[in-house]
Structure formats: C-alpha cells, structure tokens
Length: 178
Image (tube, rainbow, N blue to C red):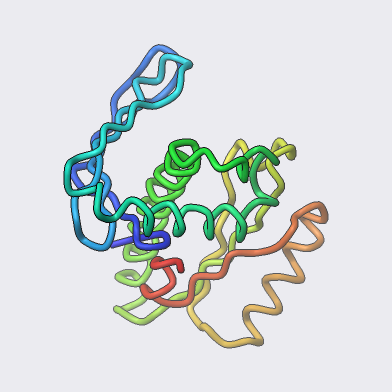
C-alpha cells in the first residue's frame, strides 16, 4: 500500500461533487488511525478531523509533513512551506491518492508482464506548468535496466523539455516514499 513519509490512506471513497471529484478517507500515520479526511469538492478546503490517537503523534506527524514539504516544494506553490500542517497534510493526502492509483496500474502492468517487475517513469512539472494539472503520463517498460531507463528519459526530454525531473518506479517498494 502506498505511503508518503509514514502517512497512508484506508477506506478511500470517491464521489462526484459540485466542483469535481470528492474524496473521503481515513488517514493513518505509522499504521495508527489519526484523522478522517473529507473533500466535498465544493471549492473549499478539505475537512480534517483528528482522532484522540493523533495527539501523542502530533509532533512526529508535523515533522514528517514539513520534511515532505521541503523535499517536494518545487512541485507546489511556494506557500506550502508556511508551516500550515493541515494544508501540508491535505497535499499529502492528494498525493497518496494519486500514488495509490499509480500503484494499481503498476500491479496491473506487472501482471501482464508475467509477474516480473516493470518500470514506470513519470515527468514531473512545477505547479505553474499546465501539464502538472492534467496529470502525468507514465511509460512502462519490461526491463528495469539503466539502459532502458536512460532511453526512455531521452525520449521524454524531447517530448517534455520543461519537466523539472522524473519519478521512477522500478518496484513496489517505490510506492513507499520517505
């Protein structure tokens, strides 16, 4: 199951909202239920309701969220590092949801490849690039060799010269980001 800096989602449900797709999920940190997340897709901020179990983990969760913010700031708006824990957590939830979807695609590609590992390479764009909002295209290949990776990246550099980097998933372990 996909996780980012110790955070993961369970009981994920999506639904159609006024301004797009809504999301309900339980947020877990280090396998402890810490919050309930609801984005009603009404144009406002998502609601995050913390459980009593979150209190002893509060400092640790905030430190993990700040680490995430520092590591991935160039992908998001500059105010991501303003110290607003709930804003960072909402961003992490969105990323975990997308990572879960990618993990499902990865498992499907592995199944089609006879159970062998495959490699997905995704271009990464800064938040102010319109391509970032439309979603990334992934390029699966059967081999996880450096030669295949470099060949795909060369193709992608021609197609996406404005990318700021690439996310590479070579195994299921890659879906646990720390």
